[in-house]
Every structure is written in structure tokens, then in C-alpha cells.
Image (tube, rainbow, N blue to C red; front, side, top):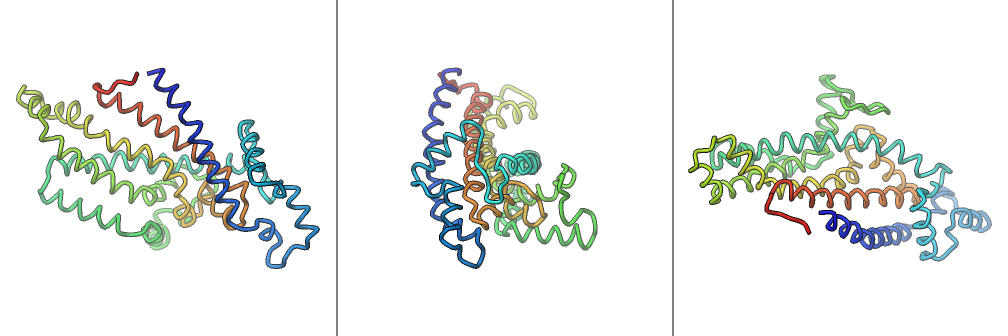
Length: 307
């Protein structure tokens, strides 16, 4: 196991460098950030040259990337165009989005897997059909529609929740935004769990466990569920980074100042340092999440061994 983890960590290095290089190149062709700083009126050449020199934009792209990566390994993600350190923006944005992501993942695990197990064991029955139709409707409705409808009904019409989340973003205020963020993924987890449970319930090892006279709950939890969760764990693991980076719509609807909000502001203001810095951290989140998922395979299925 230790050798496998070391090998995977070494494999992450070229992936991390390649992903950040691609992001850096893409962000640098978004437009001229100096023009965005000057507003609607064009900057005079002297001011533009000074700003480019101040932010290092007068150097070749490869040199900018080399300098940026050298600073990243020292914990310096650069300075936004408003003069604020990107790390300061991260220190306020990431805790909020992490709490929002935790709420969303809990909804996916508790509701999604529970519904998937129930429908998988009752395939073809009315409850199975009803859940399939409901999940299809959830997948078909865009997230911003779901968020706006829940905000209007629960926050404005009925007054059950705050229409917008406070700057501190405590867990109790993130329940509805977390449900909105997790809605589509929750539907996919439900359908994926259902399919996996239904297929594995006809496997030989399940029939053998039943023939041995094992209790039904033990057959489901110890034999059927553990093997059926492997594709679900894969989806949830990769979804962690997707939820953190894709929360722009949800955070805009509920006025949550998290990662999605900062990315939106960075793209709007063409602040390359902000966008690249936040996406660099999200790349690390994806890599770590994939490693954790691979290690969980051995926990769920004892037949899997890593050398």
C-alpha cells in the first residue's frame, strides 16, 4: 500500500504541472486584464506599461508561468488586481465552500444511496418507478431554476429560511443551498446505486450468502452493498471537486461568498491571478480526491490489493 501511494503521488506531479499550465495558458488568452482595470476608457500607454510591469504581464507567458509555479510552492498565489493577496481571498472563500460541499455530499450519501438501495431491491415496483421519474425530473431541471424556486417559496413566500446566506455561512443556513447544489448529483447517485444493487443482487456470491441462511440485513450490508458502492464512491469522489468548482450558480443565487463567487468575480474582472490561484487549488482537490477514492476500493472490496 505504501509503495502504491508513493507511486500515485509521483504521478500527480506531471498531472498537476500539465493541468496548471493549461489553465494558465487559457486564462491568459481571456483578454487584456489591463484594459479591464481601466474600465470603459482605454488606458494611456504609460499607465498600461506601468501596470503590466507591476503585475509581471510584460514578460513572456512561459516566464510568467515559471515565476508563478515557483511562488506557488512557497505558498504565494499572487496578488489580485485590487491589491489583495489571493491567499487572503482563499482564506475566506474556501471554508465557506467546504462547508457547502460537505452539506451537499452528506445529502448525496444519505438520500442518494438510501433511495438507490430501496429501489434496487424493489426493481420494477411502483416505488422504483416513482423514484426513477423523480430523479429524471431533477436531472432535467437546471440548477438555477431549482435554486430560484426554493429560494422564492421557502425564503420569500413562506419565510422558512433566509433568502440569502449571512457572510459567516453557518451549516444551518447552508442546508437548502447544499440541497440545491447536490440535487443533480444526488439523482445520479440514486440511479447509479439502484443499477449496481439490482445487478449485484443476482450475483452468485449473493445467492450463496442467502443459501447459507445469513440474515437479510447482513447479506445486504456486508455482501451486496459493499461491492455495489464501488462505482458510487468513484462518482462521489470525483464530484467533490466538481461541487467546489461548480458552485458558481448556487452561490450567486443565495449570495454565498465562496469559491464560485470569487471565480465569477475574477473572470468578470479578468483577474488572472485570482482565477489561476483558485483553479490551482481545485486541481489539487481533484487529485487528492481521486487518490482517496482508489484507496477506498481496497476497503470496500477485500479482493483488491495494491502493491
